[in-house]
Length: 347
Length: 292
Image (spheres, each protein chain N blue to C red):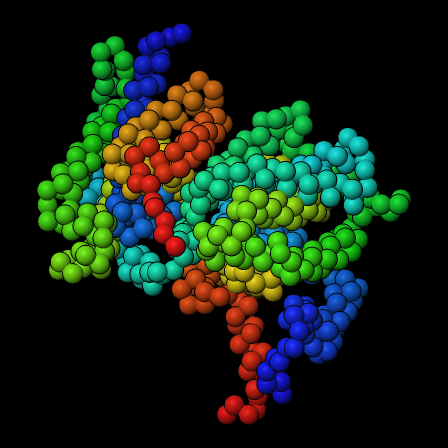
């Protein structure tokens, strides 16, 4: 039984891995992630890829909304920028995927900085609405700039390739998406050990106080926007490679709301929460689909009610978590861990 | 340039803007009293419009009975939402409260699809059908009469908030909750009434807009236009809601007519972006002073 954390140096306090057990469990988890694609059918593999993409994007939004306190309704727009960048590059230049993905991230980051510019003057909900405006413009550009984006028909692209390998199947894509997701979550975890990450958190807690402490608000807010959009851009790029077709309707406003919901349901300002939230919100609709399929023999009208049920459950999850469990799934996770740590001495 | 065409389009736009002003007024009432940005206002409108459809189409009541019933239904919905889902969020961060209203919007869309299916519907027509001419300019009768009904409620609201006891209580709560409470104003009741009145305005506008343009579960998108209106006008300004409502309604219609439907949203959001940069608190909104 572990009773307390007696830390004797700053290094120990900042360390990501605080115990041997933690490393052991993480190793175990990574092992499962590696074995997963060999052990499951194509449907679960497809879900695994979806969750991986959602984790990257949710982590990005978590950096902005959860850690910096800047609410954004533009996440889908940034993902769209990334997706279109990848699609355009792979059609017109044929660069391998690591290059296109990084360029997609950088492109989205550039757009993110542009969108973040008003963030010094407006904040809170006004900022949310500024990002909403940005996503409206982005959608307009995707739909109308036909020479680059292909208009409403969108773009179709070739599978991702590297060193002569083509990543056509979900199985192959899994080995791009999931390692990248792990890498990017780890990177995010590391950011919050540095001055930059700490500055983000200070801005979230009280921006004026942060400024008095010597944090350049504009610079760090823009950095947060850039970093967050970089994640969104990479997620969008993976989305493009995964579906291999990008249209303006691939990135609707409801997608931005989906990622905000994932951050909230998972737990704002908690990277583990972002992962849990992304997985949960991606899997709930799938679970409902399975349930509907199971019910259809008994109630033939079940499929008709699936899409409205999904809307209701989606809304109820957001409202329910905010009212009853504002710290999200991460808090539930901690509660479970606490229970086992103290078991069986507690009762 | 065809001035008659421009005049007719402008007239239709201004009439539409009148309805926007009414919705924006409902939005501003809620914001002033409770500081909640209500992203679900489009969905509340939609719900009331579907209620009207149920009363007038399904139960075959006279539209003039169905209209008040639907509006009352919409306001009760607003009151219930406030009591059950917004009240527990009191004191939470604005981000969380906004997300709750987004969640509510999603629930309402689901409910509507559940009950009335996702297919687009037409409301039974209840407004007079004779074409309306203002000088040489033709105006679609649905829009014209919708505008008249909407303006009537709008004026009633303005008078009510200026002169009645309830209106004073609302304004007192908006300016200082603690002071209002110590003066014997039931602040919690004001919160609730603000949602009821705000939803009432939105519900009436919802039925009127749906009567001109048809109804589907995507109807709530109109909430985005209203959002633009209130941000441009200033979140806590009734005057701003009126001016910006008429202007945005006009701009949207003119942009749609001259540039094409896909330009409607970008045009209004461009105005929004410019306003956010020049006057972040809207044309008539109060500039909040923050103290550490």
